[in-house]
Figure 1 (cartoon, helix red, strand yellow):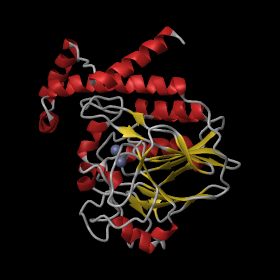
Figure 2: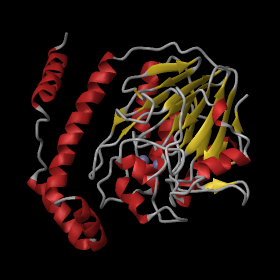
Figure 3: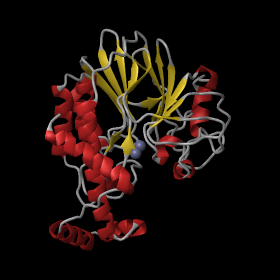
Figure 4: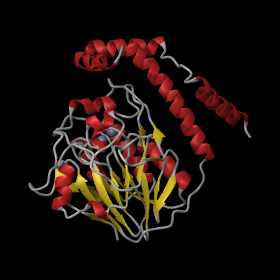
Length: 359
Ligand SMILES: [Zn+2]
Ligand SMILES: [Zn+2]
């Protein structure tokens, strides 16, 4: 075993045994933050709601160090998976920003129903911003003729409120399809963090795992932002005659890491990516002003540019990706139009009620 690997394992076990080793922001980094916060008082106020900025910066450096260690260790130890393939691939958007008709409800959240040969998967549970019952998710399911009985398993991408059914459930480290937790009989639920649910034992899936024929989680990828750590998993679905389709919640992992992880796990071409990319450049539609403070690989005072978006488009193009299903829930219209221009006929907006099928 290489010395660097030994050092890595020792440092991880030390961190496990003695808690996190603290890492600190440099004086130059703190000075840059001070200048940025002086120039943007609304950001300073927003950060102030969370904690003292200097403490947040030190925590961020520590989280970043920890996430890097886990990432390097996973990439060094994970091996190829054979998950088989599915002939059927249908994705029915149940919750997203855009809707097909006024009888369906759109919101700043994500919930997709994915049908494969062996399993029908509910991926995420939306936001339910008004804490309604029935929630927009249940309302849309009814309109689209989707019953709970048809769902074989549930996968949660990450624990942000717009994916677990609302802030109340996110804060309690659980999830919900409506404004109360309906009974879910023996439903397998795969989560990116240890979570609870009355009467169920959700299964924490930190590492890549096959969930059904042609369906796997690529495992949890940690990607800290300034305000906290984000642990997110995506699905990889191997569609016969096409290749891998990645299903993303918010895409906080970064496209770079999703592509690297997919390369490592599968000896298959990457055909498409569907879901959230988290590219809020401008405040178009109702992409709330807060979103721009949660951009991966950016500090809250740094903004996304066209170059950033085009860099990510390039990563997907280099990988041979031909199909993009783009969520409007966490990206602005500018990002959407850049992706549309780059992928042409292979681009589609995710619209509640419009099924995406690949044949
Ligand atoms: Zn989201
Ligand atoms: Zn998110």
